[in-house]
Image: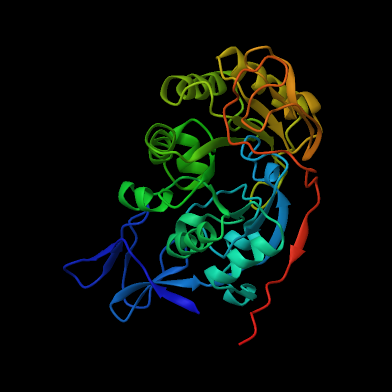
Length: 359
């Protein structure tokens, strides 16, 4: 394992190959790697160099992805590979996403091994996270197939930066997605992430309006960069107009990292202000993250406004939702995916190693 043929590329007249996976459209000579570092031209074809290799596995609460309305309280088997197709200066997982050391990919894991581990560990879902699953799409899609064969859900945690054709094939296999909407200006995307805003908005519109993939959005608020009232109002207005009021929106706190160590952490008051702006815009499910904030972490019934899922960070303190997603107070249906609620997994983070099955 470690290498596999890819989809979504074509030959150019000068002998190079163009990757058609994401809007970077990398054009590669023999032996050259794309900006994501994991897709490479080798022997006249495009290969994925990280197929079947992981930077580590962890059992997390689903709320950590963050997904607050996708089987709340359940656990998810999380993992990533290496590389990324964005270049965010504030990357919170830069040791993985910017990795040029393939030796970091310690755990070899076939799709079947991962699905079996999820079942054994009692996880409702498997999440492709830490770095962006777009760049290891073929591997993620094979894992999703193996998971579905065992009744396990597949979750993509992504920046949503991909072309339409691969987007459709990829999300056909996914059950839920949390999309990072990193800001709401093209200037920010270009200068801070090295990407563009429009393809991300296209991904969001496709997911919400054309698929059954449960979708939540995260915006990391960076002081002085993407947290102005004007920008937040513009983002929330766009979400209302293009996606509707029921897509959960998470405003999360930035901490100094990677190439943005000169900016202070996000004050809790900024998150509270952003949440107020979003709710005034008409969004029904708005959360704060990376902070202790029971009010901002809780799910409110949009009909009677009672707190139906009370959270502090990743801990569920109270749960008042029926198996069918109905508010226990007024009976109104909540947006999301729900099942019979058991003992919540809690805020634990359990690193695991996948052992190869004997034989």
